[in-house]
Length: 183
Ligand code: ZN
Image (cartoon, rainbow, N blue to C red; front, side, top):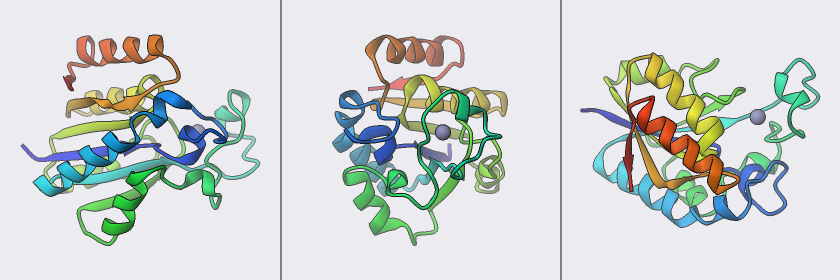
């Protein structure tokens, strides 16, 4: 089984107190853990893909414009990784098992070459981490499911705005998408 850990949107705008679209405390609470599981996956030989929201300033054609305040604008510090995960990326970004993908939609597969890069490497299992459990993590899982990947979600390394949304997403991931939920 060849695995890739997909690290989703753990950036200042989604996590920091003054982030533009922050999930706040629940997202900040996983900062040590998300770095730890990423390092552990890397040490084990898994591929690591950072799938990070990236919007163009003033992109009125984007559907999120009507839904959310501007966030993760390209070229701003809002797109920087938050906490010790930033140190991991800093230390390993030149490694050929570590990738950065800009995405425009919730799913890491939408409009990106993630699927083809995973297939090139023989990856059959994606391990999901990051924020938010019920938005970008869930949408990435739905695409992974439709593309035939096995899905694992590390429960202690995903977070949402509130407990209700978090629990709904975990239960959907497990019971509808067949994901293995790992503590
Ligand atoms: Zn966005």
